[in-house]
Amino acid sequence: MKLLAFDTATDACTVAVWIDGAVYERFEVGTRHSGRILTLIDEALAEAGVALANLDAIAFGRGPGSFTGLRISAGVAQGLAFGADLPVVSVSSLAALAQGVDANQVLAAFDARMRQVYWGAYIRNAEGLVDLQGEEIVIAPSEVPLPSGAGWVGAGSGWDQYADALPARLGTHLTQWRTGCYPQARSVARLGAAGFESGKAVTPEQALPIYIRDEVAKKTSTR
Image (cartoon, rainbow, N blue to C red; front, side):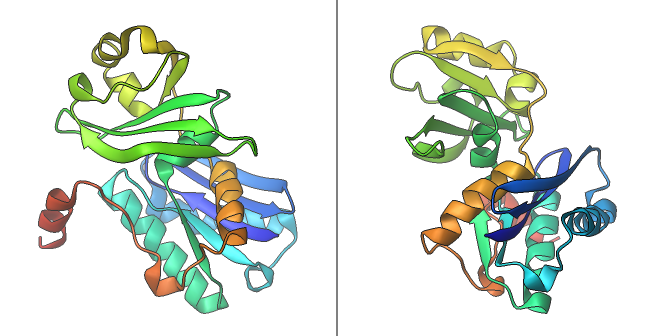
């Protein structure tokens, strides 16, 4: 399985080429995603020694996250997939974050601004992949749904931003939370490879971002 993966939903611009489990990746934190992502893709492909046209698919982080970041990720996925005639696998950016955390139960949260977080609870299955419990939502930190049982680990910019409110809400359900965690393209690739093998690949025009906060996304798109 040969796959290009990337995510720009957060402050991290992350790219990986996955070749039968071997990973060649680039990772930067900053605000220049639109000016850097294609360069990072070229670098990763060159290091892997593979041409875009020789890949099996492209996997991209479809959100939730920064509206600008999601449009960049989806636009690049569509453009490259059209040009190379490749299928696309959409991967949740929250799931990619959770996949990269060394824990079996992860509460993934991105800062959604407006005093809210993008939120998802994930449990790692027997294959080592995270499965979403319930739905991904946007919600106030003080109102996040309480997960079942204890032993949960928090990660993501939502925890960095709401370091008091989220632990107070989770109480004994939470074991710990970790700072400075971002989605990683190697996790997008692993989840994307699994999605491809299970028949979840789509055509380039179907590679669309998932905003979750639909009403805000609609207002943004009309400006």
